[in-house]
Length: 242
Image: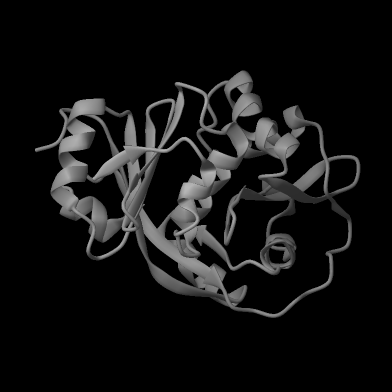
């Protein structure tokens, strides 16, 4: 039975994985006292985070899918993200999907020109230039910067006067990490910047995962030391659950 949690320790049963990284990082960032950020568990079988209407789901094979479907109908959502097989089992429309990869490489040295801080507006400008849909700057700042301040995200970049490449540990969960926002300025592509930065950001005590933006990037991440772990899917609300 799905229950609203009042203590983040209720999520301790979640295994290491990309969606548990998101859910536990969000819970550590916001706690359980805000209406816009709510967290639910279904026994020790599934967990959901709902932050500003955006849902992330982590569920085991024996989770009660029918209950989750009915729950989403009742509470409503803007988007739902989870493993592709789970989104299909929930009978949601799939708006986007690609690969989940996990870092399996060795520790590497920090790349030349590495920095762990840049002004948020400079990061936002690079990501926007590289085709990321970031919304307006205030939305980006509120979303990412609060996690940076809370220690549930961290930034890495390469550049001197101008930022040429970046990568985030977007969600530092209790047992795992989700990387993202990997971007290289068009003027600096083909120099191996991302392939040196991403493994450096990925290696650590917790396993690191990443959602590729499209299938064509799978070879790039394989060459960076990542291994395929399945597929993620995103469902954006249109006409609800079938």
